Image (cartoon, rainbow, N blue to C red; front, side):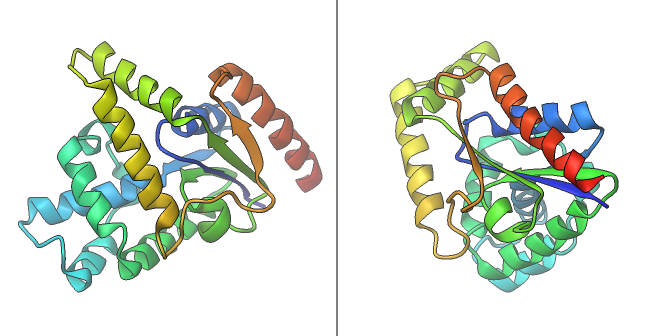
Length: 212
């Protein structure tokens, strides 16, 4: 039986780092579902297709290959902007949710992270985590990440961007960002990734015992 771990939360809360660590620890397959929207957006941009045609975007979304998502390429700001435009399209979300659900059935287990995994994509996941942190902490992490990579950043602008993104994700009519009723909350504002990992590991180990 495949064990599914659903990890949701806002941008820069640490869910991606935590998800990859968990997948590595247990030998599970990992999918950053946000990259599926970015891959769809990149395919549209590369082909010179419009970003406001839901039918075209849905067709492209159904052709995205989940196995070869390159985080370094897909993290470009222009792709993120394009992804935010198509991510609000119900037909695109339906197409990608179908693909994400198919991925979640891989043996021996899967870790999916995103914004609607525990509520929409995998509501029957064995373990659901909602990873969050204060907007200020998340903006500082994003700022530090850019500076560490040799770039220049404006903290105030990043902070405003984080708040706008939260409003957009939480206010979305289709699959808004919110914790599942049975999700375990991990606030990483003052918690290290190691502490968050240990807390998650305790929950996952208990779920594995139940599923043996």
